[in-house]
Image 1 (cartoon, rainbow, N blue to C red):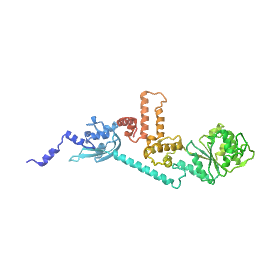
Image 2: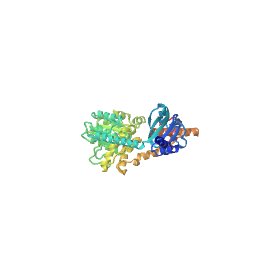
Image 3: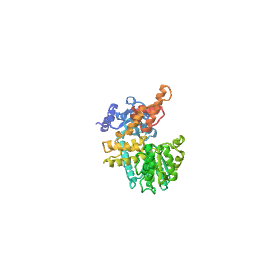
Image 4: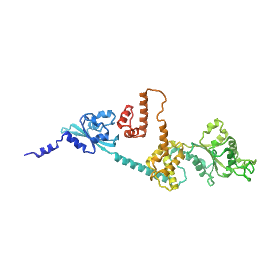
Length: 467
């Protein structure tokens, strides 16, 4: 009588071809090695997920693929060494993110005989986790923004330590009538600091009077500042006119772009600072003024003094307290809250309900912002108007297009002659290093550079780089 157990065993004796067919039906990647790490069998899913060369993998040792840069470590070799289950995660494979589990197989005498490696594609799960993290980060950003703005709608936006220090100093000097010189690049918010000082001063009940010394023609600036008597010059009003110093009586006068003030008016301004008196054009009778002076410029006044383009005595008189505002590129922590503030402002103005996406925010933080806060504000306004969805779109970012154009004008600069092969290697190293800084995996680097991931791994190994 036929033994049923023997018949069952015969049914399980699969040929190599039948075993391969079974493995090919698996969605997971499967690789089997012997006790030395040599590949015995592998399915297509494994090759697709890992990027290993399918036509030459059978019979090769897993250590070879590490040496050739296909992987940094092998779960199969680790399982052989440790003689236990090993699980590792790879984020830089062609398929995306995979989890690799290697399980040792022992014979009846507990000798290690095989290692079976299972690979599962986790790209979608990790992508969803990343999207969830982004959503949580944006939710936290929105919450922090509106919490910080509660009760301080018109207050300054300062998150970075540099700007907190600026507004701490501004608040400290606001209570005394000391002259303040505010320095910084164009668009950094010098007028905001001036308004903050005035709003926290004993003069806050009267409006801040602002004059841009570079926007008014020199022939008119003197009369605008100091006023004139009737008949002082052709076209003068019969009853004369008070200047901005008199208009700012009991308040604060903010002289923006003070570096553009002509030398002849610098003398008159110095006299006001020293004597607290002005003379209208055409008058010999001085008028006392009770005005606090705040001045600002984006120019280097010390250099102008050296070139005799600005009076040294006026510079020292203005520079009693100096507040320097850092450019936006040096305080990227402020980009997000400023962007949220401007987004809210333009949503209200244009009756919109646009929201900030994580990708747009990261692009904004990467940009150089030569135009500082003014450029950022204009960019957010453009995004609110031009975006076709509820979220601001990366494709509408003018700053991104400009940066790509600027970077594309001269991608490689050669400063000295050297052999071509050496020049190629140096260029490759620089490009790979830049890509490595901006991307977290060899897969992303390969996508950005337009080459295979295996090529990226080999070249990075050649130049001693790590992802």
